[in-house]
Length: 225
Image (cartoon, rainbow, N blue to C red; front, side, top):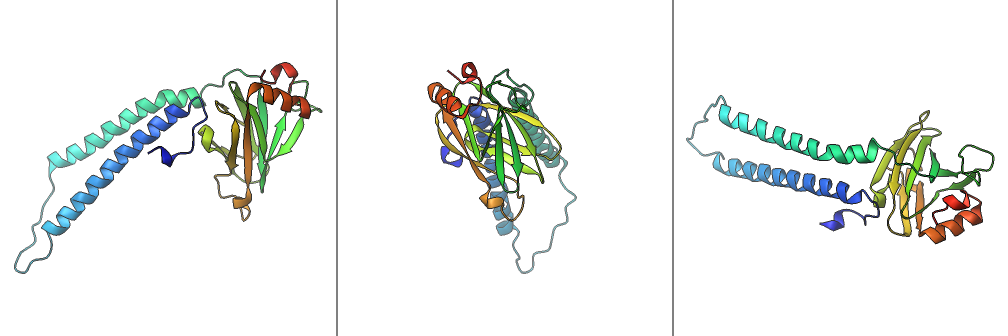
């Protein structure tokens, strides 16, 4: 079933995928069960001449079972996802790779720290629709929006977060495989929404250091080497 999801290049991607497929199989099993029951009842209680309708006031045993079983499944999923959520969303690992990403109609603006290594200073480096990161290092992304709500989506890194005007939202990921991957906007943000596509380029440490030196972004020692 791996074709349902794009290639995973994130350190926390396997945990996200395991939860996804677990929920997928549980809901798929429930869906098939409900459909089979519907077909059975459609056939069993189809119209027949001379047969009178039966009026039922329900079955307490069945109602208790189909209430308790789904409740237990939801509680189990909640416990299983709690640690994954805490790892991804409630902790921000220390890192010197920090990038500000601002959504606007209809592109992404990436802002890298300059050679001083500090975001928001005069030597910051800006680019549109192009996010460059190294492998093997956590990358902290500070998300915001200039206009409407956008959704920053790195499907290969299993990261998705809304960018909201007036708010800075910090998220992170750590890439494991060099390559070029899509950055779509996952929120319908206007007539140009479909054109709002950027690219995530994941470098090996040496390549990232060379890119950072060329762009004069990040201090050399923070360039991933």
